[in-house]
Each structure stands twice: as C-alpha cells, then as structure tokens.
Image (cartoon, rainbow, N blue to C red):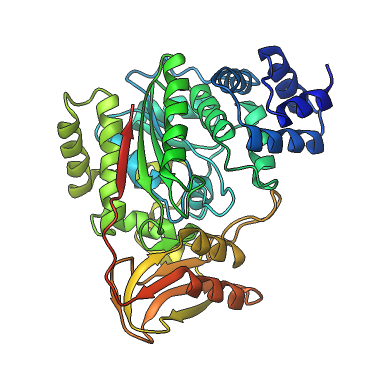
Length: 434
C-alpha cells in the first residue's frame, strides 16, 4: 500500500482499515514515512475525523509501538490523572501528592508544553536538580516506597505517540478529538494503570472551545478505556480564564506549593480536591466519593500532601527546599505591569491570549526544538467577576529578555474585558462523564 493513497482517502472522508492504520503508525515510527507525509495525514484527520474503530486501532498501534510498563509487582490499585491542557493548569503537582498521601499508588506520567498550554514536566524541571527520566526499576521502587513518581515518556514507551505528539505541536493539528484521544490513552495504558481520571478542559484556553466537543472527547476516551477494561472517569472543566493566578513554569510551581499548604487560589484548590477525590475513590481507598473528598481535604489541611511532594522531589534529585524558599527557583530579571485602561468589572480573561503571551516571553515552544525559559511568565492580579479601577494592575509579566515584552503586554491587555456590568458566575466543573 502507498502512504499517499491513505492520505487521499482520509482527506476525502473515507475510513481506513486496521491494517492500513498499522502501516501508517509502524512506517512513521521506524522512519519509512517522512514528517511531511505524516503531517498531511494528521491534517486530513483534523478535517475528516476518525470512526470509533479507527481511533481504537490507532490507540492500540501506538500502545504496541514500544514497551509497556508492568506494575503488577507494586501492590494496590494504580491510578493516574491527565488534563487535556490549559493555561495555568498546575493541578497535577497538587492532585498527585494529595491522592498518594491518601494511600493511592500514582504513577504520574506527564507531558511537555503543547501549543499555548504548559507541560507538567517543564514545570517540575524548573526545580533545581529534578529529573523525570527514571528507569523502570526506579519507578517500581519509588512507587513501592512512597506511592508516587513523576515520569516522562521514555523513548520506548509508545514511541509512535512521542513522535506524533511533537509533530502535532508544530503543524496546527493539536485540536483533533481522535488524535488527542489516541495520544492520551496510548500513553496511559502503556504505563500500566488500572484507573484514570481525566480533566477535559473547555473554553478559550483549551483545545476544545465548545462544551459539546469536550463532551465528545471525554466520551471517546472513556470508551477507549472501557474497551481496554480500565476504569475511566472524566470531568469537563472550565478553561475560559487561566486556572489560579500563575502562568509559567517556576511561577506555577510556587503556586502549587502554596496550594498544598492550603493557601492557594479558590478555583485551583476546588478543582484539585475534586480530581484527587476521584483518584482516591477509583483507587478503592474509600467507600464513597464523599469520603474520598474528605480524605483529599484532610491531606491538604494536615500538610501530608505537601510533605509527599517534598519527599518525591528529594527522591527524584530535586531540591525540596525550593518549595519553601522560592528564591531557589529560577527567577525573572524584569517585570512589566499591565494596567486597566478603565474602571469596571472584569467580565472575562481570554486564557488562550494569556497562554500565547506567556509563550512570547519564553514560557513555551514555537518549534519542537525550542528551549523553555523556566523563570518567565505572567501573574494575574484579578480574576473574572472582580471590580477594578482605571489604572489598577491587571497582571504582571516576568521576563528575562526584552525583545517581545511589548508585544506580549499588548496581547495581555487585550485579553482582559472590562465592562460596567458584573458578569454571571461561571461554574468551574461543568459535567462528569463515566
């Protein structure tokens, strides 16, 4: 079979056979199919979609393209959490320690910055010395000892997804339900989990802009999990404005640390408790979801979740003191305030514009080979619904290079909508699927 014929059929809305999908995945993974042809295929999928059968086969092929992790030697139910990506979304740094403090085994496999959204690995690696390239033996030992590890995708774990993930980021094909679903589920199933909690974002800062699309994505991933005999539950959550106040790698580590010390933003704390509760419940540590919420809240209030994160940071080579002494984290050299042009109520804050502006000053990647500046980012001073005066500070930009600060500042100012009327309050957790 010829790759160009498969691209053409998918472009025209046709369905590929399981064997044809296997041909594409294997060919791209081993280098027989070049980037330019796979880019064309990804764009064809972006516009034409995939059937359930195609998505399931794509997931299986990506899962089988490399090694899988066997965690059967570690006692207990293994539960992971995954977010589809947002702006200021540092919940993994909070949720995983809370669930582990409650006794859940959490092999947290995370990704890197994708498009305008941040990546958990990039955030963790802003902690001096922190390493995510653990061997299989180190993962098993750390899970047995402390119930939690943060790892990246190895070269041998779903390598097809690793290559496709990087290519999607630079070909404007991220926002595709079949591609997102197969990417997430192939990684999660390869790491040997028994259950998975999904945070499916919707809104301006998410890859899914409409709730109906977010629901379809959640249902697709829950369906894949069920066909693979895994327990999967998804929350559909609002990403119309950034989550919390901090956007940028080291800045988000600081806010996550504050949240685990029960001094974080209300929206970030609420969502983290709910996600951790679902992990605790699926991990069979409580008899009911209400009991699981209480367990998550307890781990927050008594500091056991915070101590768990410090324990894991130390185990993975990082300096746990950086979670107390923020001067030990990378710090920006410059700061620029963005003021409100008029008084009124903040009716909305476009999360995507904030994410793109943060990338402009170095917090994200334009190309897959770009380096991230861990020190830079944006701190919001207000959230939607709050009243502001003319000239009051809306947010602060933290930077180390000045060349794109002016452009970023203009974009940030445009992201804030100010009006005379107080906006209706928007729910943070919109739906539960599964």
